[in-house]
Image 1 (cartoon, one colour):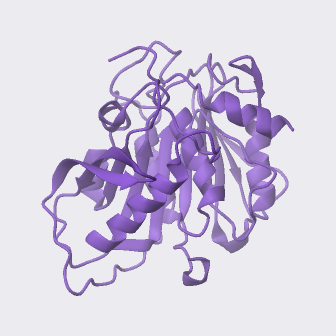
Image 2 (cartoon, rainbow, N blue to C red; image 1 turned 90 degrees about the vertical axis):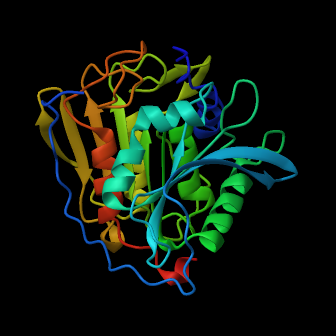
Image 3 (tube, rainbow, N blue to C red; image 1 turned 60 degrees about the vertical axis):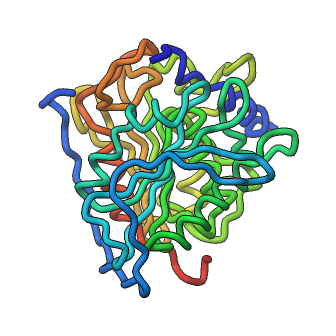
Length: 317
């Protein structure tokens, strides 16, 4: 696996615009309130497991992996999670690195893991006209999934790392009417022109020794990037949360900054990995981009966060 597959080429662009596997893993449960699933009639069956497919979007053929969980029968609505790779990576590497498929089989949700565009692959999460229309790609993929599969349109989520994390956060602005909640690893921002039509649950994991995206802000590709705590606070303000987060030392090297009192029962959370690098907490492999903590498991915590998020109201769609 290429050692540079998590590089954050795309986040340098957003920085400019913002500026103008061990038993020691700790569980930090989040209370869930998953609603009962509705029926699909007629049924929309699909074989379980991974399928690599393509979709024509914006005049370009784009590839993605569809993971349908074990036990899916097409009769009951299930959640959908988009999983985005980092710059220079690809869908296969991200599917392995995030480890979401076993979680999907255990909890019963569908995953779409697309390929970015360009050389190297990355995500045009701002919708810049000179780049690939990745927002349009996600919209097309979501439309297709909701028509072909028994998807709960009130529980659609996005996650990813680095450039893919930025894509997830970008969707919380660009497709606020379609995404219930987002979770990012090693990329956090909130653009000044982000709509504030509804409170959006946002979760971030970030190492305070990240060598690619500095935790306290700084140069990314020669351009400034935002302070992670300030960017998280910006989301908390937009979501009507309390002014200051409650800080908990979850494990010896991981603390949680959790905002309370948010509008609509949403949550804004930041896991700070002390000494952590540009890596996915709890990943099965340790990439050479700083320390990978195994005190927490981002995959487990992301799904807990998604499962606890209030379903998207019909009025928002």
